[in-house]
Length: 92
Image 1 (cartoon, rainbow, N blue to C red):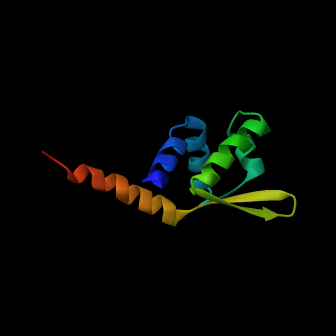
Image 2 (tube, one colour; image 1 turned 180 degrees about the vertical axis):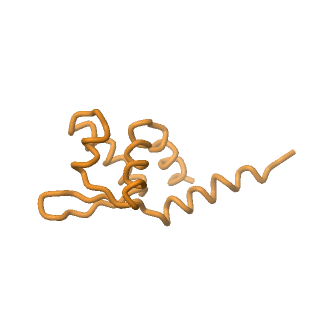
């Protein structure tokens, strides 16, 4: 449940949702420089949001030379959605 809490907090910010949406639209993989073009934030702020997404396990980082590439972690996202979806099974 700790992981679910961490992911929920990470998804509770509009900028992080924009980052995930951008990466998703790019086929699940996006470059850091592209994220700067999509989100109107300073580089340190973007780095902060990326760090939170990585710590929550929602994205993975890969370094390509001087650039960073981010990939959505489908396994973590699917597991999270399954847990959240299971909550609605408690109907009265």
